[in-house]
Amino acid sequence: MMDEDTPWGIGLTFAAFVAVGVAVVVGTLSWGVLSIHPVLFVALSVLISAGAAQPLWKRRTVPTLRWAILGGAAGALIGWAGALAVFLT
Image (cartoon, rainbow, N blue to C red):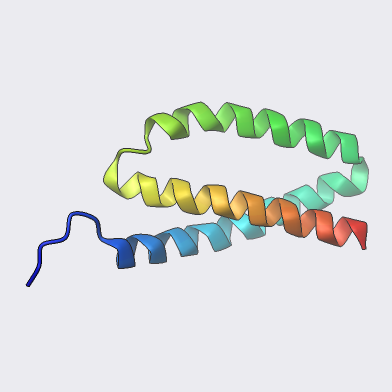
């Protein structure tokens, strides 16, 4: 059996589960803030993303955390897109 350095199957599955959870939370909270005021949504999204980016970027080389960070980033983008789609319709 071949020895793999990176567990792609398990890692991407873990990232997908994290992405779904983050997308639901971010989408729900973003939609709530968007219903208050769109400028508040943009300001809070930028501040939270900028605050979370640096510590997450430093931990991207930790084997388990890199998959969670990938899933979290994808989930946040999906959640924001979903909230904007609901808001614009």
